[in-house]
Amino acid sequence: MRAVTVYRLDDVNNFSYHTRHPVGSVLELRIYERVNNYKDLLRLARRLFALDTADADHVLIDVGQGRQAYLPELNRDCSAG
Image (cartoon, rainbow, N blue to C red; front, side):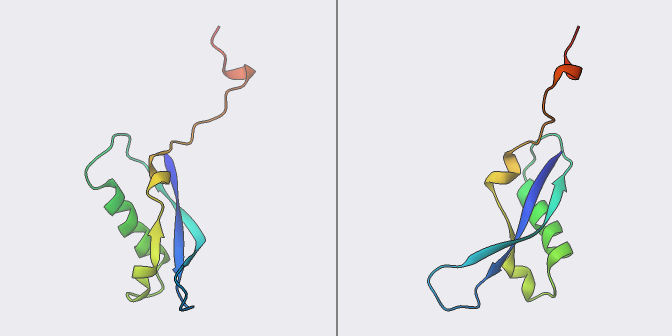
């Protein structure tokens, strides 16, 4: 299971850079990498966090973060023996 952060792109100002604000996260439950993992996660994030159809273009996810798995920390209780 992987948690991917969802950002809203703030482009209200007419500067050359945009600001990303985290608004939530979506969970990827697929174990194996498929062709449309990124597109499906983005579609789910836009469905959950977009205010309307025009705002869906401002919702994005971090590509690199989708590949990182969140594993539990090892401690003495998890040791084999």
